[in-house]
Image 1 (cartoon, rainbow, N blue to C red):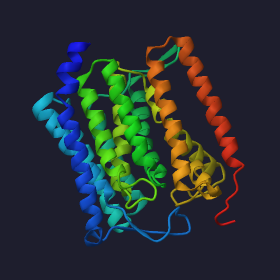
Image 2: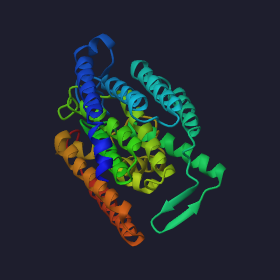
Image 3: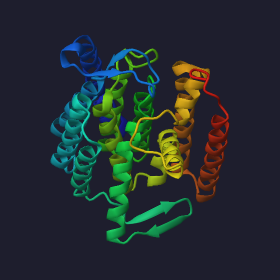
Image 4: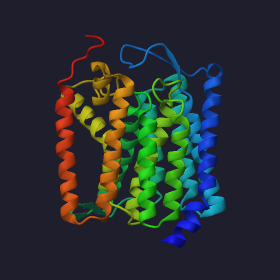
Length: 348
């Protein structure tokens, strides 16, 4: 393990610094010239902010990640299916950027997202079995492909749904992908470490200008690419036996649980799920009087606890894993009930 740390962790430090500084520089540049691009977020009755806010930060995240991946592939270690990886990221970034510019029809965005997911499926990362603590269920190829397709499509969109509070989506990316890098270090997989820590560093550079009170947003271009990468890296980890999918879901559970619960509740109420709303748990906390700063700090604590639990779970036995899952299920259930009691103190 010591030699592994010397060979990979230390030698790649310059790469991480490069990605972070590049993201930091590009974010500052995009903030300065946001008016030239003309991509502004206009506050509406469904927004948590007031006034006009640039939403160009996602471009800095995308550029930094792509350059980081190219450097890894060229100078460190060849990345499997790198052409498919870069193509999928460019496509999802392009359609999201165009949506930021012109508010494209939902159907068109979804169609391109589906095309991107089909490209990702060519990377052969669909699981052959579903692993749960103490259980394993085999997945026939057709079922595996369908489940993987829906899983990736949901991750792209849930990250977009959850990008509605200062410092929230970027903070989840920093903590979530850093945790993936740690899990890659536990499993001694240098490529997985570098890919995920590059993503975390790109998000960290942007986060410098997105913490409450935010100076700019990442927009759909940033949230879509982070969502795709979160889903993709979860499947990659399963395919190379680093950790099962449920551990990855636990890492990103503050986003997965809130987005999934809110979607199911809106479907139950027969609401138009494609329309903007303010019914996510984090939105209800902000509107109850907590504000962005207090709410995002509480969410960071939740993210860190979930991350620590995931790292512990990887090396734990089935009994401990089941206890961790049960504890988190109870925790999220209690949090949802508690948040549902909060009153909207901003609009009354």
